Image (tube, rainbow, N blue to C red; front, side, top):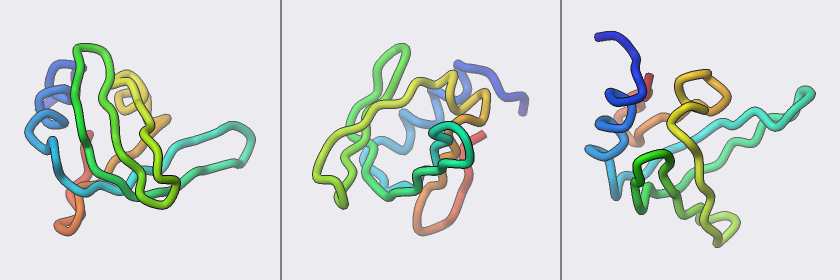
Length: 81
């Protein structure tokens, strides 16, 4: 199955409410790795609640497509994209 924005959006929507681990590139050799729960999906982005920060973060589906953000569904360790 090819990776497209619509297929990524569908997979994220299917896992709404699931625990995930994300790894986000934050610039020169800086990588943020945290765990959270997908709480909402929108046409252009999705939001997650991050327990360690006690806050909400959002990512666009384009960030997953371009591999700026990697998303892994826990506990089965299924990667999105």
